[in-house]
Image (cartoon, rainbow, N blue to C red; front, side, top):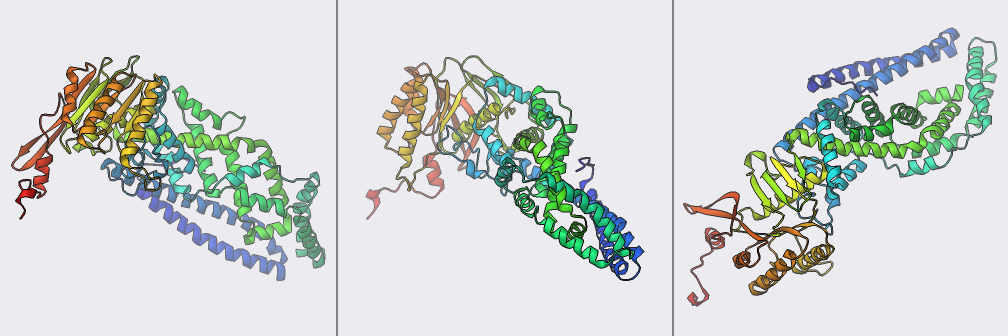
Length: 593
């Protein structure tokens, strides 16, 4: 498939393609009736006119191919317009209707369930530009498994280069959206590839005899050189011989991918082969489509044409040619040659395209969000963020914050009133560490971080099926953190409103014990709490630093600035919030009567 597209005016290109396809469709229909007329007249009256059937058939095939090309162009430009609309929605953070990737939510993962990485209004929805099942799984894998610092920096440099190739990104994604809409499972196809196709050298005889004898006998009958019975005998013999290759061709027809799937893979290969990259990582991802002594695009194009023939074997035109020229033998021969030469590389190519789908997603995200902040990976255990923002909040509404966790600091105790921004800030820190670990620039002016393993306990829920309360679920998460910390790994944790499922006295006592235990380990992190009493630990625990979010009350309204500040929170707003909701706190049980 040709991958040269004009991206300047996709709406006009859609209309042009539709008009061209309509004209070709009318011409194809008229030529079909002409073919029928020529065949009938040639057989019944003027035999010489039957000679026109072959060139007219060739013209018919050309019209089909051109019609398909125009429909492909129409689908491509429609997909391009859809991508532009989706980009506008992402910009406004209107993510409803986007694939949430909910099947990737894993409550046992160290951090993915707490940071809105998957699900409704998630990072996956913001990042995902993939179209295949394998591509979306690859992207999810990259989100959940951060890279070591050196690999993350290398990937960041490659993604910044890739994000500058706007046309390449748009064409690659548009091709996928246009044709890979109902992806067929390739499990049967891979099993078929592992078994050699039944082919006998004797099949070469009918493959050669069929076209030559078929044409000779057909001409002889048309011009009266042979009686019609010769043609009948030839067709009967052909049907018997064609039965020898019926089963392997039927098995191939059932196993081969959809022609639309192959069209996408072939177009992707063609696009990749022609693209020039500078970064070694991008060249490495590109190499599999070029390094087997032939181009993947040509091999996939051959398979696409074979698939087209196999899927149209019941088509009237194919049946006519097959009966007269024993076409099935030639198709099977091409299929055997293709399988022997190319079959072993298909899995590698599919994985290559999945990697590119994920790369395209990240690069398109970088381009759309215009992010390029540097990430400095530190050799010491520290975390500095300048003007850090949450990527899922609409940019014009998002308040940036600065944050520092020095090497000597162990615990950040975060206090603040309800709705002041504590949890959002913790998720902001976590999700930007996830981006940095993927090689994606963070939503910050600058980020400096040690090589931490991220761990969270923020969204613990009960499970009726497993008879687990939310409090027990939180304790299980905390135990997982303590076990990791005992192993000496540099952990960065985010614990939101710890031990909230128990009474105040036990919560404060347990929280203090947990904080001291974590402060004595190799881990660092942020703990949020409503228990202001815990902030007093700063005087006895030098590695604990108090931070907080504040609020202000103006004209019976609570106002938040969402800016993190040094020190504990001076006031809380629960009573004021209850009052604003109509709960009269002046009423007590003693007032009832």
